Length: 308
Length: 177
Image (cartoon, rainbow over all chains, first blue to last red):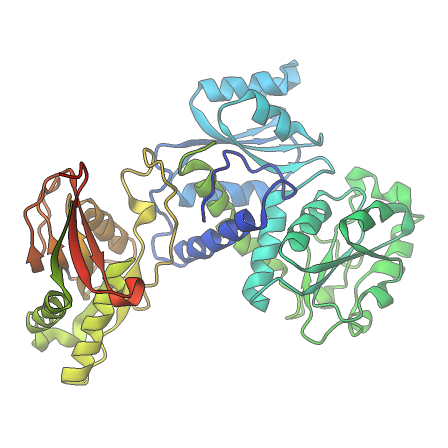
């Protein structure tokens, strides 16, 4: 078992072995957060820049805590405070950060592929913290980690992703991740935002929530992304919620021990009812705590060992 | 050049001599911690021996020092991270660290640092199966199984049943002469 990647850009390019390595490492990292002193010196003297060019609280704070638990020096960067508003290009900004000694850049960008451009131009390690509607690797890895902790294994599970698949980077990363580790993946939502080209990957496509929930072990609810124009694809939030909102009644169609996940932030009453959000079946807050361990593992792995 | 310096007898002797050096008047306060990978199993054997001879169950934990290494950045091979499990509150306890080999003292330094992040033990003692000399830090073990004179171009390998299906300590000279 080895991890020779300098960057973590997408689940699509990771092998199942590499994904397992990240999950195993996260398991060890999780223990660090249970100690009196929640800090280990692994990244002492390493400078990590969080280059978040799109709003984010959860992912950015989670990365920042992960970096601090590994003793890295952390620099936070967001659009409003940066020279990007003065017209500096992304690559130039990153090259400047690198010239200041940054050895890992965690990037969130509204354009799909932005982290790949940086990875080509920059020597520092690049971690994709979400690029446009493309991928959100750390979210998928923490989803996999959470499910592995609850169910013991991923292989053979029936996993359902509900909602705006078209505009969701979480969905893309989750689909690649769960398929690579041997789960069966289904997607469901209004036809306008559930593209049928996912069939080619072996994903089953549904348009009825009730039908799609049969024999399901894991339900991943996606957020209705009002900022990424989800609303242009269906008539109203109320209609969406009526047909694709998760409530106690409709969840009875799934397996008894079903686990409900949501990448956050949740719109209570739209994607799921408050009753579901607060139900023991829902692991939304576990996902958030596991996110720190998984991101520690990602940071640790890109910075250790010999890189190709 | 390979040189077998000892086998299962010496390893058993180490465990029983460690047992004899335990302060039994304070055994309630003792926590044994094995340094991964082989120290874990040596530590476990000591815990079993104590249980067998005295009927007392001594709390046992394991430590992976990967995240505390000082050669982290210039390591070319990828250091696989293993799990640390310290099951008990170690505040005020007497810790006995168990490892297979002491060489530069850097692993022991990392292990001590790591333990301090869990609390403030009353004391930390170190038991090692093999002391191969060549220390780079002012750290000395309290209990030693075997002392071997080695040079820096030699490697000391410890094999134990639980991991390697054999019991042996060997010294290998890198350049083959």
